[in-house]
Image 1: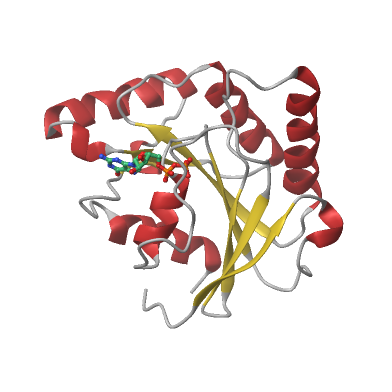
Image 2 (image 1 turned 120 degrees about the vertical axis):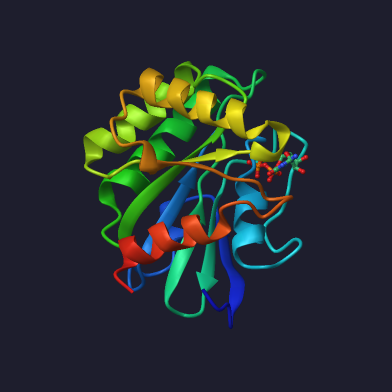
Length: 195
Ligand code: GDP
């Protein structure tokens, strides 16, 4: 994918701030610190258009990125902060639920998982949610540079088993630091976008 343009459109805290539904959207979900910002930056060849956090607890926002005026990446708020109150968690749930179920321009949700760990309870819930709404459920298994080839393959099997995925090609080991499988992720996105 040749990136001619990549810009943040808005960091939205409520639906009234979302941009009009006039461009296809690919959403990225995952627990905080899994590597969502790093994935976006790696895909679009930027060092820090998307903010890499390292500091959990930031405000829960939906970040919309315009790519080439063709489509958008939508960075969903991360989950799994230990210190979040029930009220905040409910707010998070409402926000994501509304976006996932009501957004007509949403074409696919990519779920990010840290390749080193088995999917946690929240990851499983998120995956089931994505599938039940009718998305394919593409998994990007991040930080693959931290494992050997052998270990990667083993972890892909664990992820498939835990989430009940039959088609291994839906789980893509990825490294933002090593740019591993960037093309694979782009190809899957292009397929979703029909381009
Ligand atoms: P986010 O909270 O999901 O947006 O996660 P970030 O993209 O901010 O990444 C969280 C931390 O993981 C940062 O310290 C990143 O440098 C690190 N990280 C992200 N992707 C990779 C990767 O592919 N390999 C390695 N080794 N570290 C990564």
